[in-house]
Image 1 (cartoon, each protein chain N blue to C red):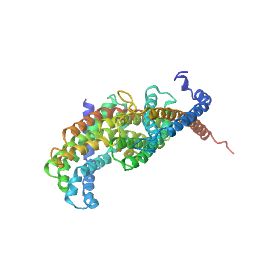
Image 2: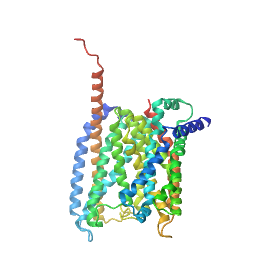
Image 3: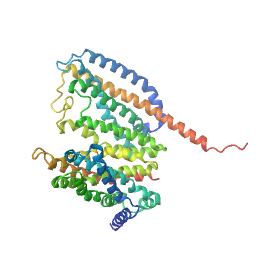
Image 4: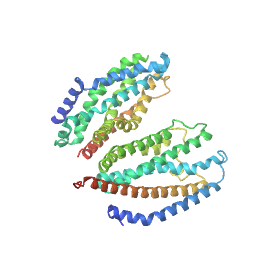
Length: 245
Length: 224
């Protein structure tokens, strides 16, 4: 099964019909395991039980950036290879990515209140993620502003690729600027600084959230394909000449 | 080359003539700055401290206001189709148009800055540094804004969407522009002018490369 074979939407639909239930079950199982481990993880000596927000916050933040990456690759697929499912993938990913970004902001804000004593701080990481959220919303607005899906796809693809510049800025913002947000501690040179009792639940949760994204994304892509078929059928219906009475 | 020069010269001439709208940007800039003392009070010390930020915000909004002229007018009278069909690479044409737009609408903002700085109680050094950062920063605003203008013209009913799409892209320019010009009003030696200023130059140069390509791509894909 290669990427070009998936270009046929019907084949894509039949494949995802078979895969999706298993994917959803795997996601659910991993989420249960990860949350169970997260509950069992010891309280931090300094942060107490609030440290467990991390197990939700960090995967959401990772996914917020990852989804834009997926959309950038899909945009390349739209502009360069004209892959028929690429713009479906890009369009379906945007609201999911916006939701992850929103959740990362909200959980971070709830975590920040007891830790930093403030819900919001204009530091580099927080601000750049807020900009990412704004760009997600702008992109969704762009998708909705154009009626013809293929034209909307190409306009959105250009904007997605330009916006991809923001992703490395977010990633390295904590290293470049000396701000309130802690520097990278899981993926860094010289290995993770996180204790194993926290690292393993976090990794399980990260995998679970990634699978959650894949599940939601495939389901949203199916919806989008069906919506386009419905639109095509309606256009066909509308263009039929009316029978004289 | 002559074609690009001709396009640039034509765009500047149109922009400066009656109804061209380039100088309305300066008027808008002036109005924004005049509104500020009414909003935050006529405290001269406070105005001085906020001065660079006010000037930068005003310039940002003014350049945003004139941006939709970049392609929309040409689209309305059909000359955009001719530009798309011509043998000159579209990327170069976009760059020439943006350059013309900057000369007609961006440079007047920079020229107006010293006068407006006077209204905000900025001293000579502060005014000079704001004008200098605006001089190297406004090209970035024009060239990234061009991407939004190109997207909006293909959408017909762009309208407010242009502002929503362009403003997030201009945040880095705003950050480093204000950071560099704030140095002049801060206590001496606490901050460096060079670092944010050179980053601002780097952003401008990068947008000079990215902007025309992205704008040309969206025009080429959108206008069929």
